[in-house]
Image 1 (spheres, rainbow, N blue to C red):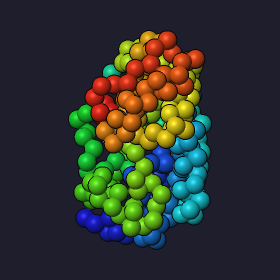
Image 2 (cartoon, rainbow, N blue to C red):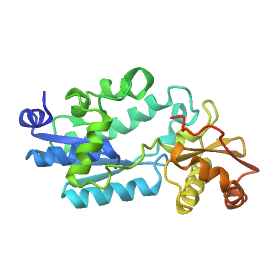
Image 3 (cartoon, rainbow, N blue to C red):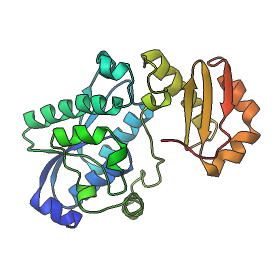
Image 4 (cartoon, one colour):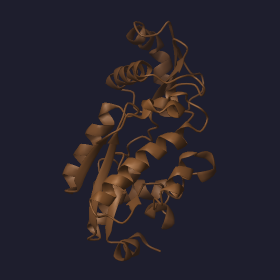
Amino acid sequence: MKLEEFFEINNRIAVAFSGGVDSAYLIYAALKAGADVKAYYVKSAFQPEFEFEDAVKLVDMTGCVLSVIEADVLSDEKVAANPSDRCYYCKQHIMSAITEAAEADGYDFVCDGTNASDDADDRPGFRALQEYGIRSPLRECGLTKAEIRKESKKAGLPTWNKPAYACLATRILTGETITKEKLCKTERAESILHGMGFRDFRVRMRGNNALVQIEESQHAEALAREGEIRKALSDMYDEVRIDGSPRISR
């Protein structure tokens, strides 16, 4: 099935919107097909402020209606304890909030931006999507990440080359308790690196130390500026180290 055909059959949809590449294109494509679309963004301590700002800009650009839902995910001990399936419990909170709001607004079902490149076996959150009956049109229609970026660029969407982003909770080792303070520290550190010109990276917490992972395109620059990076983050961590491998573990 083509994406246009999906929206011909399902022309009134609620979208779980993150502000990222996939859900942004999903909204664009649905609106272009003439569907009645409403976006739902769940704001929590796991999302940095720039993600929310990106989401607002995108819906303003497309003319889509946006509903913002506040969620205290850390109030759930199963989430805060940070087990290996933390994403499942967090997704339960998010999708429960969105489906409840969408139902109150008269929408029959919720869609998300999962695409054909996503590995369902490697993501505990997929189980929550299935439990709440979340549809994934991009995945159902066989659209890969590369295709979505290509089509987003053609459509003039500013998200077309936006780096993949995992929530702030992924910066904390599995099994280590997540606190708002740790998340705020991580967000601040990554904001500093972004201000230094780095684009696709993560600042991982290792106790009170930081492990900075940067993609290959800027890895050599990061190593050359390691002293500058350490100084910029020195008031936040006991030690700052650049990962020797030019890659980001998701």
